[in-house]
Image (cartoon, rainbow, N blue to C red; front, side):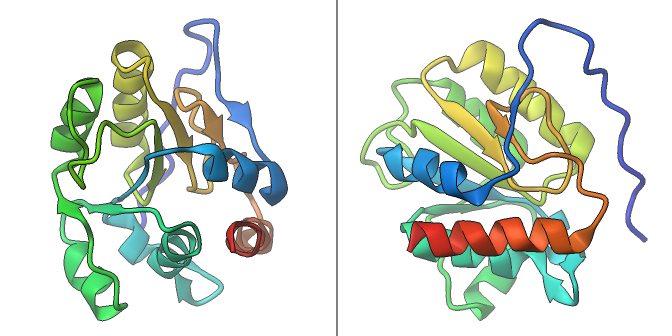
Length: 178
């Protein structure tokens, strides 16, 4: 049973996420990143978009843009089944703590990430993680790919009421990244 969307206080602070409704600028932003990272949470296994697991869209995005994946919780097994080997396996809190460190060498040891995409993380945990990065990791930008607006990200999708709108954006993003 999916959890209800967690209520998020969006009145605190002065800077909210830029709401992205079009795949083209999103693809351009991702392509500009030198060392992007995709963090996949367990909700990506549970959430389906018109019968297709959300994790499959995330894998398509990672493949299209050659983005390394950080598997959290129990997502690694499904990623391997989909033919995708994650570069790292961390708990969400662990990866956020690592990302705060501008000296960290990243999941591939090539240097700290400059852009982090999140998908499939519980809304309350995701918002806390994004708040932490917003305040303690000024060296990186964040983007969420879930169907809820995350005010603490730099770029967030809007709250989608219709699955087909979310699906169209994700498919457009994959096409734009290829």
